[in-house]
Amino acid sequence: MGHFDLMDYALKRYYHPGAVITEEEASRHPSLRRTTGLYRWKKKIVRNVWLISGLFMLANPSLPVIVATAIFTAFISFSILDESI
Image (cartoon, rainbow, N blue to C red; front, side, top):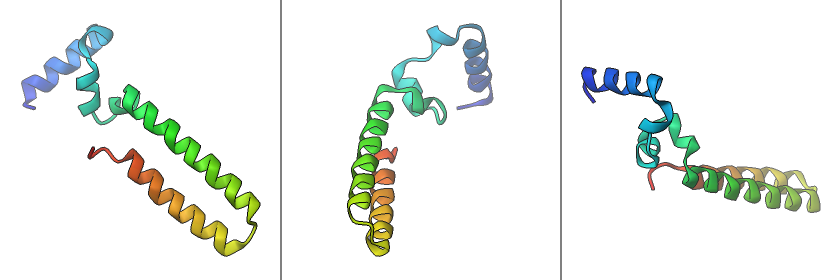
């Protein structure tokens, strides 16, 4: 993206914010990526994974089980929210 493209994008976004950004363009933009339907769907999956893991941790109140489950759940969450796919 050159200098002119960036200025053109910024001006269009300022004057016509809803008409300029498509779902495809938003998926490539670093901060607008979180507004896409796919990312919101992934966040719901991660929320459900954490809820299930939290219930599992409450059912097994052993420190090694809680730490291992939290680390594994964090790894799974980052894997789901990864933007490479």
